[in-house]
Structure formats: structure tokens, C-alpha cells
Length: 415
Image (tube, rainbow, N blue to C red; front, side, top):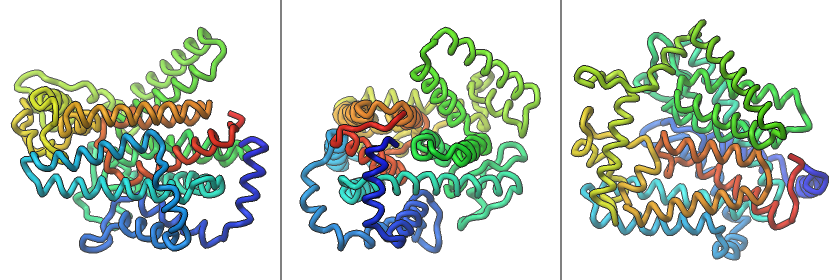
């Protein structure tokens, strides 16, 4: 944070209360989770309620003034949302479409509400970023307990536990270690932005998150973090040749250690990244093979429904008709394929325009750490369905709020 932003932050801090900080922290922590408390009530819904009720009265006038001024990235998301609603009319399973569409609607409502609250207030942007870091570190600590003891420490049912051999995969506050890994890839670069003046806590929190990445046993998360580190090394290095040499040596040493010692069976897990299609190809334990089957199914689905798609929220309904090796109802595990196959080239174009506009806004900040986080966001979408994942929209609100503030005030931080 440079001197200008530090001064602005201190001025805004004087106007805020401890209660507001606490509500942000608790609200974000709950939204960055997906567990049921009882019946249909989840921590996510409670988090929505806390944030909305806490600020709706105070900021009603501000909301009315600023709703008409979304960023370009948000505008394309609105177009995708509207077209997705239209696609319900030709969906095979209208009830499934409506269910997913309501999730999408609630995520967009969260995004716009939080963005309005953050508008031109550096303190609240800063608090939201720290709240995301706090919820991620908290999830990591919970994940370590899950990983080390093989027990479930959060509200939920045992069937949500996921094992690799005899090892429990850390879920944190999520019911899927892959979504936990998704949050980890988004947040670790933000720690380096938020806490540069406190190197000990910065290294501690970053180390906690990197160890959290390992305990998820998520192959995609491991790959994405490596790509992020490589990206950050390339863009921040003046000696490209030396950087490539050092990175190659480091990677060789790391892979040699992992495949020689094979701690917790991580090496075996990484090797399964390459799908095995011999014999009948029906190795149901090979999730990588099934993911590849889903990719080809999604491509065929998109090709045969090129203009308008099969209808929002209906990929899993049609997947048995398009999968060759593992025909069953399944999600695509890929946001781009999901959007393309469900809404056709029209909806997919809106989503790509959103990604491009988001990239350009982040690029304007000249913050390589923000770009590194953006790389995690774009790469994670190849492995997860995240366009109606609530914590992703909190992340978007924080990133768009921060970048808009930097742009409007003509300032960048010191990184």
C-alpha cells in the first residue's frame, strides 16, 4: 500500500466501528462455506442474511444512486444472466434450470450489493479482502484437523468425507476439497498485497495456505498454484534466462522429492492426473478419465446446440446422452464448457467478454499480484463449475472494488 492509500485508509478507518468489521468478518466467513446447519438452512444463507441486513438500511440511497453504474465486466455478467433466463424456455428440465438460475441470481445480487457498499471506500475494500484471507486461513486450520485426524469437524454428514487411499482430503469449510482449493488459489496472492509491511505474518499465512493446497489432494489446485508461481516469477523477473534456469532447477528438485518420498501418497495422486484408457476404459476410480469423457461430451453438446445451448442448468441432464465411457448425470467440472453447452455461443460470448473486461480492469492497476490471483480465477474455471459459487462473487466484488478505486484515484500500490 503506498502513502496515498495508507492515508486514505486511516481516514476511512476513523469513520468505521468495530461492529462493522466484525459483521464483515463473520458474514464473509459464512459465505465462504457450504455446510448445512439444519434442514435447508446453510451457513452460506446465514452469511448472505448478515451482510444484507447489516447494511441495507444505511446504504439504501447509495444503492439507488449507483445501481446504474456497473463496470463493463459486470455488464457482461448481466447480459449472461438475462440470456440464461431466456434459455430456461427450451430447457429439458425446467425445474433444474430454475434452481440453478436462482443460485445465479443470488450470487449476482450479492456481487452488486457488496460492490455498492464498497463504492469509493477504501476501508471497506480493505476489510473485505482481509475477511477473505481470514476465512481462507480459518478453513485451512480446519482442513489440517480433518487431514491429520480423518474426522469431520464441521456441520454436515460423513458421506461428504472424501478419501484418497487411507488419507482424508481436507475440505475446510466446504463439502468438496476442489472448491476449497479454488478459494486457496484466489487468495494467496492477496496476502502479499495486504500485509507487505508485516513479513512474518505474511509468510505464516502464505505457508498455511500452501500447506492447505497439499492437504486438499486436489491435482488441479496443485497445477494452478504452480502456474501462478511461474507466472509471477516471469513477470517480476528482469533476467528471464536466469529465471527459467532457477525455476527448472527448483521444479526438478521439488518433483524428485515428491516422487521419491511420496508423502501421504501425493505422488500417486499426481500420476493419476493422466487418464488411463486401456482395456475397457471403465476404471471408475480414475476420475481424470471421467473428466476427459465429460470434456468431449461438453464439446459435442456445444457443437449440436451451437446457437442457444441445451438450457441453463441442464448440462447434467443431458450428459448421459453424450458421455462415451462413463454415461451418467454429472456436472462438467468446467465453467467454460458448462456455459457454452447450456447457453450456446451467445451466452459463451458474454462470458468471454466478461473475462476480457475483468482482465483489462485488473491490468490497469499494474499490480502483478492481482494478475496472479486473476490467473488462478481463470485457470480454476477449467476444473470447476463456479459461475454460481457465492464466494467467487465476493472475490469479484473485492477485485473490482479495489481496481476501480485505484483507477478512479489514479494511484497504484507499491508492488
